[in-house]
Image (cartoon, rainbow, N blue to C red; front, side, top):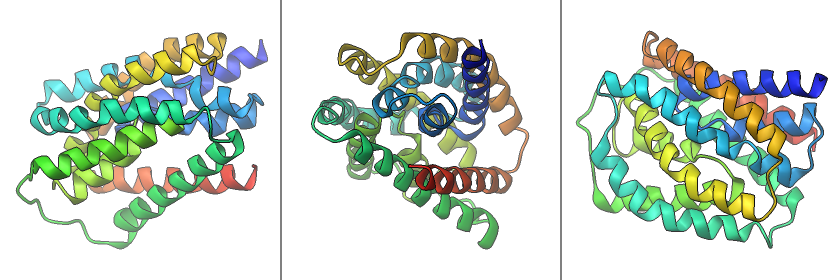
Length: 249
């Protein structure tokens, strides 16, 4: 029973962070499942992935109503991200589980530092014209697909920084477009990891039930906050999570 309650709380947490910060939630869930439930590395890595689909859809519904999703940019990203996602997922058969854990922690740390600096140390940048370069969009898709497949995540950690830095999207639009892409990318990755036996069914079901309402609430909260505030929350959360995760490996 305690395991069910802990899993449900993790689902509520990652659902809220998903809708609020444009993430699928799988990346944050992996260290939590490993630390609090003691799941083996591959199960902790892949079991949250199917929950990113309903979580992303739930959050994207809120953003869609406000017309914050950039569908043209998302289309070009997904063109290259989908095949690379399958390739990355296949690579998990040959990469040692502990290596995957350190890759996850290191990647969270990198993104956390980036957004911590942006949110707390730099002035809020003025709005710029959105850039939808096909070439850069395809590059974003390649990186997103490969990393999301290897680490069994939605890919928001890759897309959000690139959407903001390269494509000049506003923070909320970057979160919204990321969620739309995550909803699509979660499908092939989830299927393949399930076939490989990397998913714990009970954990998956509990997380999928919990993330939907909390992702919706998270997105509702996000649209009321300033972009700068979201960057501060995003950066601080990822930085603390990464440091704790790496130290406990």
